Image 1 (cartoon, rainbow, N blue to C red):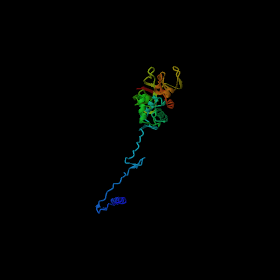
Image 2 (cartoon, rainbow, N blue to C red):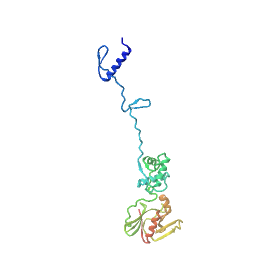
Image 3 (spheres, rainbow, N blue to C red):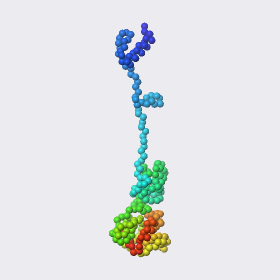
Image 4 (cartoon, rainbow, N blue to C red):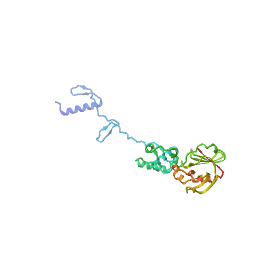
Length: 277
């Protein structure tokens, strides 16, 4: 009779033979082919999880949300920056400009707008910030973009091309100081309202008054250069403060005090004045 111990030894021999690839002669004298024993395999990429079992699935790659594209930031300039500033004025986040230059005031205004709407307070106008601002505002008009001046001048009138001329364009709202067809200086100007329009035509400076005060309107008219009755080119503190949101009583207002002071020193009585479209 075979004992249990002998049975265990036979199983052990068979297992060893299977591993070595040999044939085995059993107790009954017969040769048996080795039995292939399949051992459990582990994927090289498998990693143990919390219960110690292998996991063949690769670990998920964390998604990275890219920051929105920045359209304009501090140091940029141009017409698009003017529109940004004009729209920020509409929602009362900016009170100066538009200047066309992305300065510290513009940056602070953008930060305030972003923070109020739960956006990252970067001070940079990215695409998300711009889209939000577009939804809250309307498209600015031409003079909203140049509310405080700084608009480009147009082509001078042909009557300005000879002599010493204050060449004033109602189309571009600019004044050119020209000598023999050469532009010496260009400044932004505004004109009278519909009820008190600035006259058009060819005139000449007939009187200069440095500290003039209007007797009709009781308002200061510094650096006044009169060219048609009571109408003059002069500095306007209201224009400097409010831009094209206001108007004169018919005079040609200049908002840049340093520029009008320089013009006042150069222009003489008898110099030509051309007011044109």
